[in-house]
Length: 431
Ligand code: SDX
Image 1 (cartoon, rainbow, N blue to C red):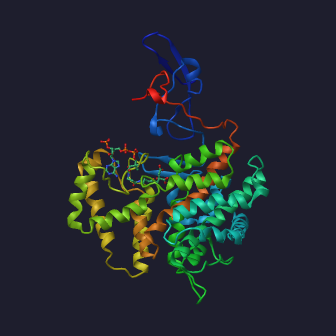
Image 2 (cartoon, protein in one colour):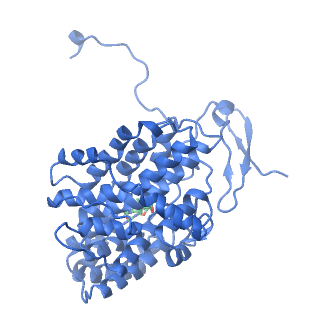
Image 3 (tube, rainbow, N blue to C red):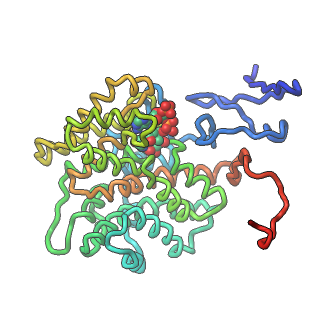
């Protein structure tokens, strides 16, 4: 017998029954698409804590058990055994590539890493101290002005080339934002380097001398990009889907995603973690900040802790923590005061009743900043790296939304608590 849920209204005694849909994993959903037509009422769920916005086959999170799957593969397996290009192929196509597919995909992405020369002039419009996320928002959206030949979102070939261009060009856009902030010349991508290695090359090479990317750091960056690639219907991905549901072009949708990711409650948290660790300054001050984080009247939150879905350790944070140790060892950084504070903060928080009761664990952003700083990446670039990696997830989710036969323009309703209809008051009669 098909599972259903019945809603009964106490005043009228009326009731309505709705089908329950089951996925391949995770909670069932109540299909309430007819709820308003039936009941003349809306459901109410600010922040979408109990609302599924779509059907998806890309990523699955089991928050209670700290499990993250991409197309069914555990993040730990992908981070350990794949490079970023393989994971990007898996996201876009639903299957891991064979050797030939991997090589062709890497080639195709590589040959789209350059930016149109006119894009350079967008950078000179910014102040040198512009936040890189402002630059990425602007430049990513501006790319739509360069590809009029492939903006028909109903054309699979246009969707594919736009997806490849966005994935391929985001590292160049991000690296050039960094170079521009330094006043250094832009470094062009190289076709003989992998995705993560090319990004580090464009970040740190100069025209003055040969620059070889440290392979350990390239591998660490590659793994970090994998960890940030996609994460179900988070705020920025939902933003991309909602923007795309109106038929907006993919470059505009990704620019919207970058804007949403910038927030400190979301992708901006990695930058906020570093700022917080610097503000704590010494392990002796940790109890003071833990106290503030627990104080309802204090807006301070422990950045890099907590998650809407994970009520267990974020599996990405575990891998980030291991990667952090590897990078610091490779760079021969013996004592990193910020890492010491972070590890002590994590130890204390995980033993604290408040954090245990509210199931607050370190999330993906907790360690990333320490790694990036050790690599010589400035704090302002941290969220830009998150955006660079998440572009693959955004693009994949955007394609899935466009190809979904049930897709409609997203148009939420509301609970109106404003002024009821009233007489207009002409200016001369207003007090
Ligand atoms: C990312 O959604 C995703 O998948 C996002 C992401 C991705 O890959 O896309 O995983 C990336 O955004 C990770 C999260 C990065 N943000 C931070 O680290 C910022 C700090 N964390 C919090 O702002 C918060 O935990 C959120 C925003 C992440 C989640 O907030 P929720 O789900 O809305 O939870 P909540 O704010 O309702 O918190 C539940 C309770 C509250 O207390 P009560 O009102 O129930 O008494 O826990 C408390 C909160 O006050 N709480 C914290 C806390 N996070 C939640 N208290 C202290 N420090 C914190 N960090």
